[in-house]
Amino acid sequence: MKHHLPVFFLLLISVWGFSQSNPVAMKEDFKPSTLNQPGQEYPQVNSQGYARFRIQAPAADSVRVSLGLGGKGGTKLVKAEDGYWMGTTAGPMDEGFHYYNVKIDGGKFNDPGALNFYGSVRWESGIEIPAHDQDFYALKDVPHGNVHQILFPSKSTNTSRRAFVYTPPGYDKNQAARYPVLYLQHGWGEDETAWTNQGRANLIMDNLIAEGKIKPFIIVMTYGMTNEVKFGRIREFDVKYFQAVLVDELIPYVDNNFRTMAEQRHRAMAGLSMGGMETRMITLNRPDVFSHYALLSGGTYKPEDISDKSKVKLVFLSCGSKEKPDGVKSAAVALKEAGINSVSYISEGTAHEFQTWRRSLHELAPLLFQN
Image 1 (cartoon, helix red, strand yellow):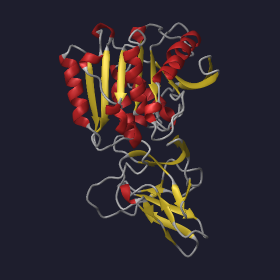
Image 2 (image 1 turned 30 degrees about the vertical axis):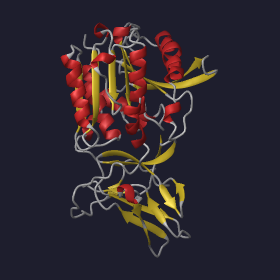
Image 3 (image 1 turned 120 degrees about the horizontal axis):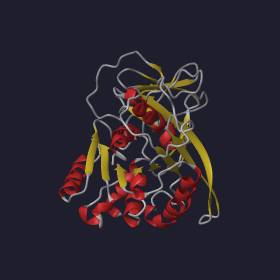
Image 4 (image 1 turned 90 degrees about the vertical axis):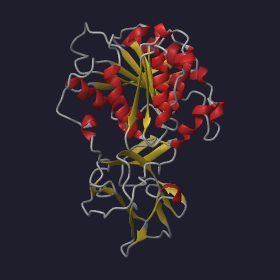
């Protein structure tokens, strides 16, 4: 577990997405972020990936946005005569989604112009930097599936727990069809809303299905923290509690209430960051439950980890090119040499962030449930 811990904390650093490339002349073609609240002009992004912020705080002495300067504390805003504070990141951000917050005189707040997303163990502001490949998760005029919110009973935690279930287009029309299931986990500090809100998982699936690139399947997303763990105390996390919720409570509920193919060969588990750690532990603990494994910036498997190769149909390993891609690639090669179907994917130009994981899901989905 020690080997995998560093990657899980990176998700908490909302400044991680700042590009370290050489400065370029900034273009003044800024437009409101697509994640702004209705009618709000700021924050804005330009065609190069710079982000610009405007915060109303007339009585403040200092305003800083957490994005933009890596370990230097973010982007410091400058006060104008009208009482608004404005500032632009010193360089372009990585493509895709980023969490951020605003510090006003040392206090942490959300940007009133932006929508909020659950990450870093709180609802944080979000901004979308346009990506060159954003078409694969764009909202298009294609048949859409549904994302259902369910509450399932959990005796092990003495409560009802929430999950979101994506069913593909046509699920409600063809009552005879049954579907494989991917159990998809979020990262540390996030919750079961992350993969659809930040990750656009449902749109990625809709577009792939419309293009005929995948066999439709169901996705189930639930909260992966059963014994709550504070930042810096990850070693206190014990997967057995979440494993009980997932394997003994959620999976039977889904199989009883949705038209699933309720066999190991039709069931996959994947997770990003800490969700990858959970995936690794549970798939190794319970090889009778899942046949497809995927770790997205969430560690690797070794050949000796897998005791029965016949039970594993796919191992998918991915990360961003700014993470540790050599380890991911070499792990996939070692698994393949050991006779295990394994695939590695590296998201070019991204780090421990959602653009890496969006791309990873887009690459993973066509590989699932092929035989």
